[in-house]
Image (cartoon, rainbow, N blue to C red; front, side, top):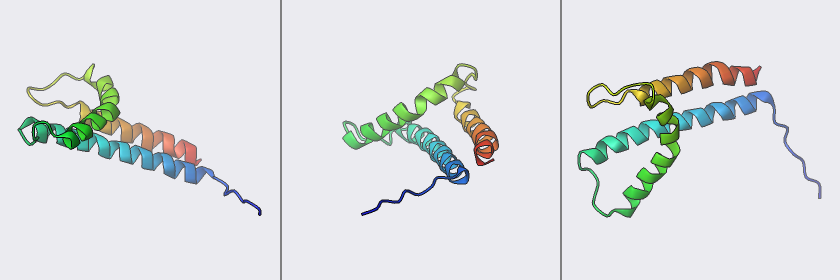
Length: 103
């Protein structure tokens, strides 16, 4: 029995990195929307699934958002750091890193 391994080329790696950045951007949007819904009372008390979802999103998204929250102050009740974080992620990731990997 012979096993053949598929060759991984640069465009495939660039596409993978681009997809990971897209998924991370979507997770940030879902995190912000979940915080908005849960803050207006859309969360059932003692609900394990909502605690699990919000805990996962917090653990995944908050370290990246914390970088921008240090420099961008809140404007009244609005936190603009997720918008700047997604723009930075798309500009740096899709505009610089993915084309450099693609070659």
